[in-house]
Image (cartoon, rainbow, N blue to C red; front, side, top):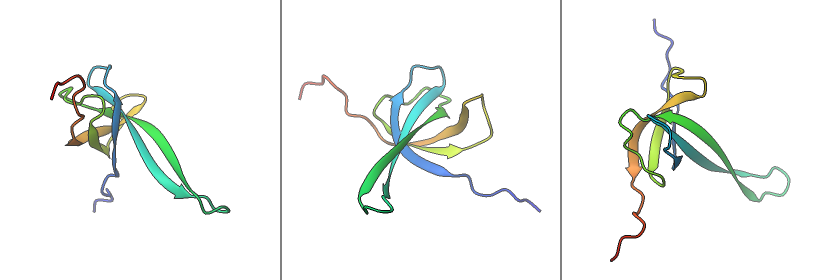
Amino acid sequence: MSTEQNPRSLVGTVVSNRMDKTIVVLVEHRIQHPLYKKYIRRSKKFHAHDQDNSCQIGDTVRIEECRPISKTKTWRLVSVVGHAIAEGVAS
């Protein structure tokens, strides 16, 4: 009998791709303040494994939890949801 559950999946924006086969993904979510009832943005950065170095800064990606690949890397890239708009392109 397998006790493995479905891995967690998050959507975020790539903020760094300088490392080899690693991207840093910023995931933002909104929470409601318990007393003042105002919505607050909370964010966290995750290191994710990008096997093909295919992501660019600004891309929207889906990452999934996996086994530890290194000390800080326990997520892997599943898909690129949206590509970043190229800067400096004349239209």
